[in-house]
Image: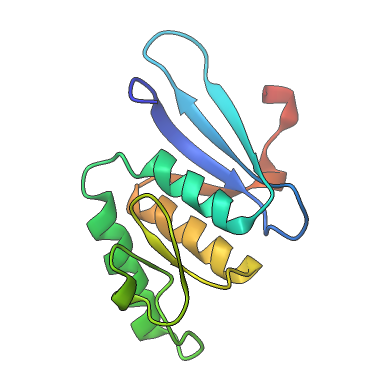
Amino acid sequence: MSTRKIIAVYAHPFLKRPYRFVVRSTQPAGPEMFDLHKFNTRVDLVSALLDVLGHRDGFGDALQAIDADELAKSSHRSRRYVAERREDIGGQAARMVRWYVTRPLGKTEAMDIVRMACKAANVRHVALRMLDMATV
C-alpha cells in the first residue's frame, strides 16, 4: 500500500465472526480501492490493522500518546490497550510484530484500538454499515 493513500477504515463492533474491516484508498492513477480484511479473532484483526496503518511517520508515538491520554481521562479504563513495551500494559498482553495489545481483547477494546489507530494515522474511521456496497 505504499503507493496508495488510505482515505478511511470501515469497521463494525466485532460482535460475530468473521471480524472484518475495509480499507478505502486511492492510487495515483486509477479508481479508488476497497480492501476487505476478514479474521477469526479480534487480536488478528487489530494486528492487521496496526500493520496497515503503522507505516505512517510518527504513528507509533501518536498511538501510544492517544492511548495514554484516554486512559488518564477515563474513570472506567484501568489499563492501556496498546504499547510497544509489555510493561507499559500490565497484566496479560498479546505480542504482535511491533506491538503488545491487552488481553483478553473484547469488542469494546477492539473498537477503541481501531478508533485510536485511525486517529493516530490521521485516517477517517467510519462504521462498516455506512459503506455503500454499490460503490464497491
